[in-house]
Length: 66
Length: 141
Image (cartoon, rainbow over all chains, first blue to last red; front, top):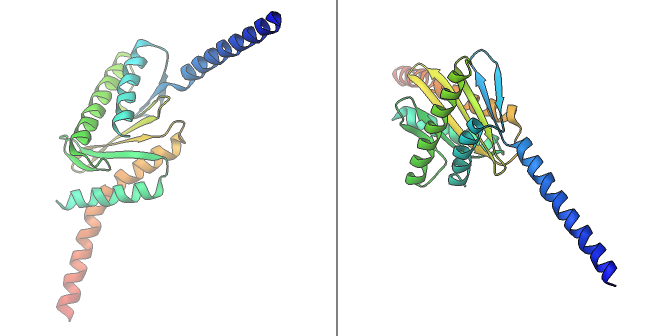
């Protein structure tokens, strides 16, 4: 009985950790800033302090406009 | 005053055709809010101020990376996206900013926002033609 309980706990902990990791990866992939220039070129910025500064402003705007 | 009404009409058309857009604000080059879907004036002002800050930061980033002039941007967050389009019109630069739900159809949103700005530019000459036509019709009668 304790062994079954331990297995179940390990499975639950593993699932939780996997879910957290997946969500973090998904978040990193989704959150980005795309800058479009006059000449039609585009620069995508993500995962840097520069991008984070712009994303913080964008998050505030999204919340403000709800 | 006429321009403000045109912007309001363009905004109404935009929110009618674009289901992805949550809130929009159209701002003149001098910072005047021409039209917005945000009913509360204080929140609308804060929103416009935030958009200006976002644009300034993005412009600084663009310069530091040696990119050409910034015409539009999308900032995608988990809670939703912010779109900003900047366009020069006859009466100076004009900005349209919109928020959307997460994971929007980017090309479609940009298309709708640009169309909205263009419709404001073309609204004034169209109205002028209408007024002239009515006057002639009245003279004839």
